[in-house]
Image (cartoon, rainbow, N blue to C red; front, side, top):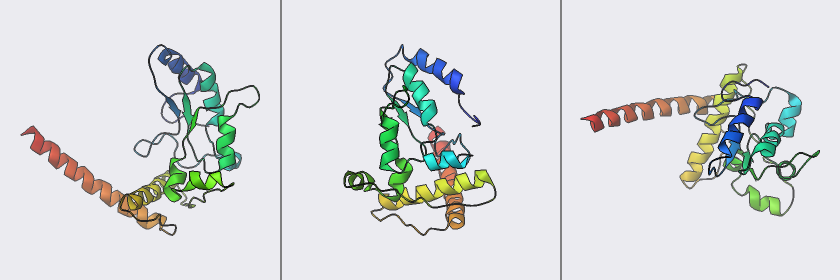
Length: 188
């Protein structure tokens, strides 16, 4: 795996050990956020994509060094994967919390469905040639789902990645313009 932004494994463990001296509520292991993605696109190997919990091995190393709870996110969409991440494996501890945000954007009832049996959320496949473009289109699709739910609508499973990406870029440009205008008025 490439470390684009943030810490590599050794540095991250050092930082967690420093943080052990403070009242830290949670350490989250992920590939960044929608605003600042560290992982451009999907994981590189097919086996990691199949596994879903892209960062679980790294998170287990962090758990071993941390005094605070550790959360892992990254492509998790199945109950069995969630349970495995929470469970010790090969003498290595499991994490305390599992993030399933993207899966919830497509199926907000997922935890309730998990209570009644195994279910995997099918996330839309984005297949542009550029990995970074896949990443921003995937994020735009997830944001669309979250906005729809915020407006009281159901997630939309058939949204076009290209259309959604273009619309999200326009929306972001307009919001940035509004924000700059607001800042300018505030400084007066």
